[in-house]
Amino acid sequence: MTKLGRIRKALMADPANAWATELGYQPVYTAAPDARIAVIGQAPGKRAQETGIPFNDPSGVRLRAWLAVTDEQFYNPNLFAILPMDFYYPGKAAHGDLPPRPDFAPKWHPQILHEMPKIQLTLLIGSYAQKRYLNPKTSLTETVRSYQTYLPEMFPLVHPSPLNFRWQSKNPWFEAEVLPVLRSEVHKAL
Image 1 (cartoon, rainbow, N blue to C red):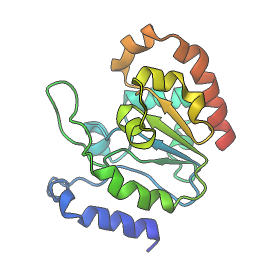
Image 2 (cartoon, helix red, strand yellow; image 1 turned 45 degrees about the horizontal axis):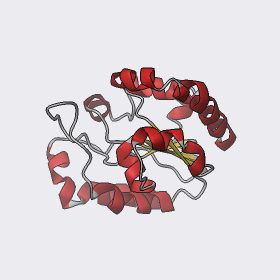
Image 3 (tube, rainbow, N blue to C red; image 1 turned 120 degrees about the vertical axis):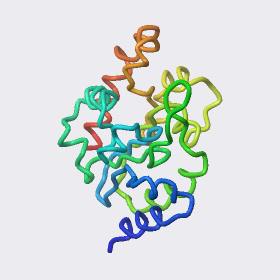
């Protein structure tokens, strides 16, 4: 068994994840030693958890369009590692899904990322990932607007959820200025 396989097995055996095992959940993430881009987002949605495929929803369709990559490229673990802040669907809240568990990523991400030495670019999708990896002192909007500060290793992004249509309509600079650079950085890493 590979080191990444042993980490996955340990993750599934962790008592903190017993609730997920009882529900029949598998952790929803992809990782391979040759991955070049890490996509770090919030947590899998219900549909992703049910299918075992990360970003298997309208958010994923939009994200792949933003990156200008095919489904085949995005789901090739030798190109993209997909590591949410929690690898299990956290459940429903009053408005949207519950947040990822705060202790999950600090425990598992370092172990997994250590086994992927070829990562050239990390996409930080949403405030949970950005707070963990960038510790920004500004709002999500300002962090995304100042994306160049974090290049070439990190690229902060807003979540691609169709529910973010208001944010995108208020921030047309994102599509006009950020997405072309994002696509260029992704294609350089690939």
